[in-house]
Each structure stands twice: as structure tokens, then as C-alpha cells.
Image (cartoon, rainbow, N blue to C red; front, side, top):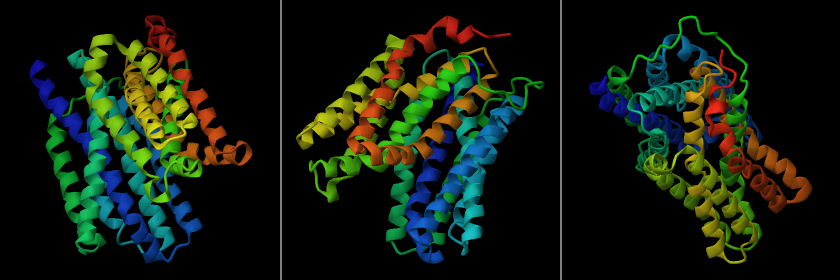
Length: 384
């Protein structure tokens, strides 16, 4: 078993890299798809929802498939699917075909997302040490390289299809390298194909939804918040989210070592406190430096909360761990997808700063629940 550890760890890192790389490759292609279809902003928005819809649907079923058959074949299928569908996104020429292609792309991404987290739980359990933060950091690293490479290729006037081909080849090669090194993680041949989240899994899923909601809100609304307060001009509005992303990646790269030293409870408690303080600093800031410090604190504080939630989902005995991981991934993604719209709705009534104060209050639930989700009693309660 020990001889499998480095190979399985390496394969898991490749899976996270491919997931981040793949979704980031699509972002620079969006304006080209809009021009090719002659789509309005409203139609494009509806089409982009298909990616999220495909992901959520696939996530629900992937948990059951991983519980029954193991995460290995699902990771391979999802990763190869991303590589195959990415070039197709540049070929479709009608709203219907783009919608179908985005549904397929989202389904591949959602399947890979759940399965790689299930596999990460198994690898971490096998090695008996924290690894989850590092795995999640590589998703961010993959995203950086994916967006950078695709942007570079498009800037070379290669055309959209020609630009996607080397990216697809890289993803395909990474999955081919990873596949034989993945663990056979079949858990239960008689595992249910569906299980309603219950017990501590419900709390884990709710906290994941809050954390992902915060990330989605920062992506879509933080620039408007700081420009609306007159802290920066429109051209520099994206600096806040950039600093947040850098801080989150750095925090996750260091997270495993920190968790090994102080434990999940302290990481979750102090991470939640630091992130909440970051929101307060951001909201009361009257100078740009203070606001940017707030973004850094939010990124550092929130960086290792989600890895802890996934680790606890894998450790609980209330329901099959693959289904628990799927539940957390699905609710987290739903929070990321639907949260920004909710922030906009609330902002219409109380203003954008008011909506962000509500986010800060929600985020405060993370440290408040740290003891509840990390106690041995919570992890084992409800087991049958």
C-alpha cells in the first residue's frame, strides 16, 4: 500500500489540475461564442447557465456512481470528456447546439469535481495526514495556467478551434498519465444510488454553500463594491478579487502543514474568524490599502475551510462518504452559482454594502460551527 501512495497522490493532483485548467480554458472563449452566435447578453446569460445546470445534475449522480464503482473510472471519463468537448464549444453555431455542448461540458466538469474529491478523501485517509488543501490549491493553479495559455494562444491569432486543441491534448495526456495511478476506491456494491443528506452532512453542506457563496459574490460584486465606494477606479476594480485569489491559493498551499500542526478545528475556527474580520475591514475601509487588506484576509481565512469540510465528509459515518462528498460539492457549487444572483436581489433592497454585511454574518457561522463539525461525536452520530 505504501508504494501506491506517491503515485496516487500525484494522480489526484493531476485530476485537480485538469479540472481547474479545463474550466479556465472556457472563460476566454465566451466573447468569441457570443460573436459567433450573435447572441444578446440575455441569451448568453441563459446559455452560460447550462454549464452550471449540467454540473449540478452530474454531481448528484456522480456520488452514487463513485459509491458503487469507485472514483477511478469517473475521473477518467470526466477528464477525457472535458478534453473532447472543449474544442466542440468553438464549432457549434446555434444557441441550441451551444446549450447542449455546455451541458455536456458542465456534466464532465461536475463528474470530475465530485470524483476527484472522493478520491482525495481516500488518498488522504491512506496516508493518514492532511493533503486536501494542497489538492484544492492545484485547482487554482490549473485555473491560472488554463486561462493564461488560452489567452496567449488566442492573442497569437490562431483561431478559437486551433487554440483549444493543444489545451485539450494537455488535459487528455494528464488523465492518461493519472488513470493507472488512481486508487480502486470501490466502497460498497450495495450502496444506495441516492441518499438524502442527513445529520452532520447537512451542516457540512450548508457551510460549504456559504463559503462558495462568498467566493461567487466576491467574483461578481466586489469590483462594484469598491468602485461604488470610490476606493478605486473602474480599471482597477478587479484588483480585490485578484488579491483574494492569490491569498486563497497561498493559504491552501500552506494549509496541509498548518492543519497537521493545529488540527481541523483550529483551522476552521480561526480561518472563519480571519475571513469574517476581512469582510469587516473591507466594508469599513476608507482607503484603498485597507480594502485590499480585507480581500487578503478573506482569502487567507477562507482558503482551508472547504478542504476541512471535504475531509469531514469523508470521515463521517452517517452515510456513504462518496454520497456525502457529492452533497457538499453540489451545494457548494449551487451556492457559487446562485449566490451572486441572490446578492443582487438583496442589494436592490438594502444596498450592496448591506448585502455584504449579510455575507459577513453568514460567514461567522463557520467558526461558530467549528466544534460541531469536527467533534468525534458529530462524525459518528447517526451511524447505523
